[in-house]
Amino acid sequence: MILNLLLAVGSLMSCHRDGLLEPEVPGYFIVDGDTVKIRQDVKNMDALKKSKYLRGRIIYGDTVVAYIPASLHTPPEKAVNLEQLKSPNNEYLKGKPFRYIAYGGSITAGVRDGGYFNEGMETSYPNLIARQLGIKDFVLPKFENNDYNGFGRLVLSSKNYTGGPVLKFNISTNNSGVDTNVEKQVTLRPAGSTQAICNWGVPFSTRWEAREHFGRGEFQPFAERLDYQNNKPLSKQGDLITMEHGFSDMIAYLTGAKDQNITDFMNGYPWGAASIQEEAIAILYNTKGQDVDKRRFMFCVFNVPDILDLPILHYITSADVEKSLLFGKEIVFRDYKPDELVWYPNPTLDSLMGKNVSMALKDGILKRHERGEKGIGRQSVYLLKNSNYFQGVNAYNDLILKLSKEYSFPIIDMKSMYSRIRKGEYVTHDGIKVEFRYPAGNFYSLDGIHPTAFGQAVIANEVISTLNKYYKIQIPLIPTKDYLKR
Image (tube, rainbow, N blue to C red; front, top):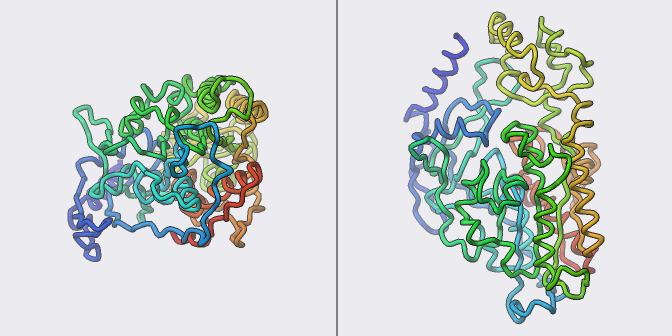
């Protein structure tokens, strides 16, 4: 009760008008030449905090996030020769400017710090690649200037009422793109004209939704704002198409944000992957034959990393848990040695480890979760490695490899990249060591899952390097150091 009271008081304090608009924050910003007033959207806070997309986050209150225009790198001085990436079989695009279309989930969309907002889109890997290619009209589905904070943007809070190790956040509720309907479900304002969109990343979407063309599913609001069903981006004409799908399935499994019975990775077979790839390949060629000379656009696909290569599962260790628990070890570590467990930070685990939480409350928490494994944020490495989840991941990556050989397209090897980052073996071409640590590292944003602007630049260079090697072209790499402060 005391803990709940403290949390309630903290929330009220941060929601107070004077606490929301701090003196150093001006009342207006200039966004793309337009004067934009800070608009308070505190009415949407409850819906945001309860949103399935932010499940497991400890959110104390709301905050103002000022508009900061994305400072992008300087494009190459010499124009890149893209003729080798233009298909002679695509009559529609002959004589027209080079067109690049990105298709995928959260990483493609530019999700970072738990949210989907304009600055993240501007520094998404597709936009950075388009800039490097010299494409002038790569259209992002940005929110209107008045709604620049989009959805779910998190900021670290300096308060820690429990004294626990799990990160605490405030959520940006000013100038959001969020609407709430009568059922208090999160809905998003549409992306205006969607006809020319080039980045078709749908945040938090799994392959199940993609297989159904986002006509249904828990993450439909993000597809609806793009009018995805009517636009069907794979039917759009493009010289180059990148496809990133599967990462969001992994996150849905990890966070419990999606029912496992419809998460494809739990099936042990990547049905969604097969559907997406077959659709893409049917468009890639004039027929479904294997004649690579008939290709209508250049194509590359991302594979999926190992879930154990994410820092969110290593932020709290079993040693940390043992050190903070004075009793209840037989429940927390039941049937496993401490080094056989990984821990997903969540409010329950934070309460158990919080030095300011009463022992009586901890005892009650342990008894409630005595029979459950995931309720207290623990997961067995053994179970992860031997579950249908990993069978599904491996089947997905195996299918992509098979199709890449059959239809002659390259793979963006995210699995290898994330593994090298975890091992501390990844250094960018301009000498920056990519850090696995969290939250103070350079690759992972505050949510411990999605990349920072620097991380997006690293991914963009992986795509560019793959294209250069496979298609024998020479696209300069992006200076990643330009994104270290973003």
